[in-house]
Length: 237
Ligand code: HEC
Ligand code: HEC
Image (tube, rainbow, N blue to C red):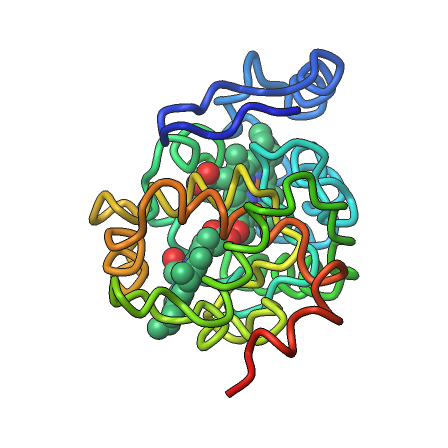
């Protein structure tokens, strides 16, 4: 099992060694920070899809289903959400530690390239959810996702992220995302200002306990395959 992300500082370059070498070679970089060296992203004439295949794929995979929880899955994310995030990284406005370390190099992307990159990754088939590991945790995560935590003023996540966590427009897909990444971002939202569009999520994650966050994150990674049948009785309203 992977370690859960205990804090947003848990942000080292968690590449398998071979992958790190690949990234270093293909980006001409000396480490995983130095993305500015890439000629591809310097050139506004290069199509977004080419950048996706040659650069982004090193961390997010060609099909947007990354192999390490450090790197969020992009496949099937709403196009608008991806444009928003790439715009925020480019402006250095999304500023949690891993955003700085891995995504701040992409200041050369043009608006057209950002549109094309977003179109490419959003059209990839969504990730296949993982088999759940801890059923009790997942059960409480499912309840939070579908019903919220009324006592704590936490709304149902499904109200904005979709009944199946599929996302729409500016609301990201959560279904099938790595639990570690979801958990880490919920902690990021607690620190105001690290994600410029995250105000609504700040209130929500402030009102959740660490266990609530772990539960809903575990549920998202296993969602929806394991839940499709089970979800409906729980939402009985
Ligand atoms: C060296 C590794 C690396 C490369 C190359 C890379 N990314 Fe990322 N990307 C990351 C990491 C790490 C994060 C998560 C940052 C965080 O935790 O806030 C991320 C986050 C993102 C997000 C936000 C996803 C979300 O769910 O909020 C988008 C969109 C994204 N990357 C797109 C791209 C695109 C497009 C490219 C190519 C131009 C690219 N990335 C290249 C490592 C990389
Ligand atoms: C009122 C609407 C709303 C509700 C309710 C809501 N969210 Fe969000 N959530 C958003 C928006 C908007 C964003 C995108 C913020 C941004 O662009 O940075 C987001 C982003 C996220 C992200 C970051 C995803 C990524 O790929 O980086 C996570 C994780 C998340 N929400 C989890 C939850 C969970 C868990 C709940 C329920 C406890 C929830 N949200 C309830 C609106 C909502």
